Length: 560
Image (cartoon, rainbow, N blue to C red; front, side, top):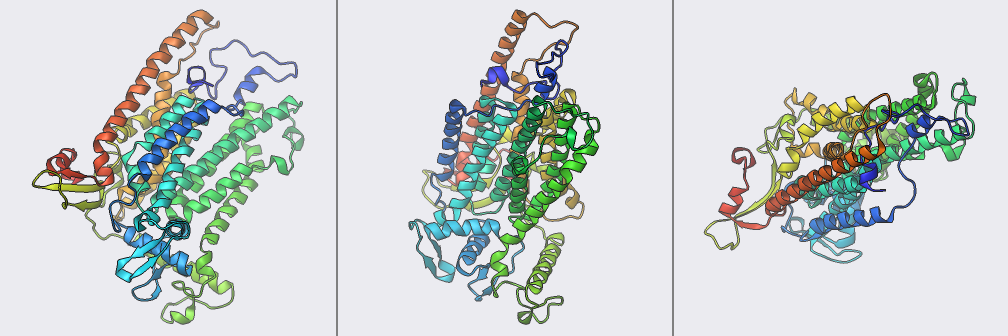
């Protein structure tokens, strides 16, 4: 399916716009209903996968090339690389200096993934005299603690490419989304550093992708039922598609597991739980309305609420399972009451005591987060993030020979400026287009962006210390907003009128619009690529002459 024929249909939820009265097929199902329940192609499109492979290869080269540089632990790698090794070695985060459990304030899953890379490729820590060879192969130790983040970054590019292609029904727009993520400096830096935020981004995006697949599967289920003669106006089970375990919303249940994984990386994943639940409910109401159900809201709540509850329980179970190392060990912080006699509320009762102590641990961590108001050089406020108001310097060195008296090497967590400064206009355009077209895609994008950003505006009222990388899980959806607008530029619209337009004239208009739109999309992606190339040295810590480094500090009062 080409972008010329399918890119971002303006009538995604209004397929009858500007069309003659709907026909009725031989099975009695109106054509308009068929179009409303239509989903993306289910067949394998080899060309789209080849294009996807090219985009993912670009992302992989950028993220794996020189991954072991710079040497040593940078920024918060001093915490997470060590915690990852402790989890692999002892099942809990461990302080090897004091030979005791570490007090940590983030769940363990992201650190387990970092530790898995260290297990596979080796780990060294000169400060604690630890040197462990890899079980697969021994490489530079930096590669061991950064490889998991790199893989997460590469997989997230793959996911966004395929999600965008399914949403917009266009290989061109799907690859544009993946390429924009691959060429974003913010995403690149997080993909090359042993921090937690890239894993949070990955699991949130994966959960969203699973829900998009769930939406398509449920619409196909209704379409099949109507083809088989279902009368949706009949009350009760007789007016609903047949059940059975094969028709269970498996993708939705998987999304629950993935959201549990997101929360098991960082608690901020929880903001997406109600947001995605709302999307599912709205989509289920929409499919019933399209099918002709008389009371779509009531039926959607009755039919889908139990599945949403089950997905939520799976999320909770997955989250608790991520703490299995702590639960099955006697060494975790707060794990045994007898080792913390001055901490009230702990218990050593079998099973119940472990869960109670885990709850007490969570209370302590929650108090830490809510009371975090210590000033930091690189802290920023949420309204600065999309404007790149205060990026975070992960690494800086003035050592080395660069052919000038003064040199500079820096890793700056900075989004590719041209891309990031497109986000706010794209969000405004997405809102306008979504309302005008009543397009589910615009709503999904905006709800996900809101879940990723708006809670931090609330916390800013309390003066909490925050950093720009808190915006990471919203990044794929911000890019989807940009691509949605690009798709609107490409997409021809069908004029309203009492009679259908002349097919020949309409085809010519569509061809002209697609040509102009294709040039605009290509030019934009090219400009983002050139901007990324210019800033690439400060994304990966390449040594520059000081003047060359300074020239890249466009907002020198904010970026230095």
